[in-house]
Length: 95
Ligand SMILES: [Zn+2]
Image (cartoon, rainbow, N blue to C red; front, top):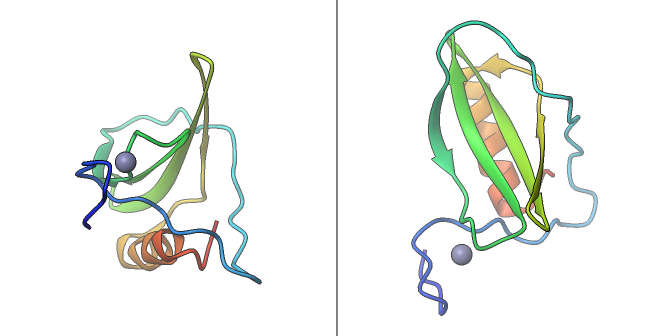
């Protein structure tokens, strides 16, 4: 994505009318390794990361507010389904 500000990472599009509403939970402190496979640009107050863990995937959202960080996660989905939700999130069809 080309961005005038010189950002390298992806930015999420504005949420569209009637977008799918994701359910955001407190982070689940599970065992096992977590792998971040995609992320959005940290120039924004809200970061999104697509995470894989134990053969499943979910999206993690981090709100950066005055040095404070609030983290939430979606449900865990099969990897291919999470990839579809990730694309919808980036395009503004889900938030
Ligand atoms: Zn940026």
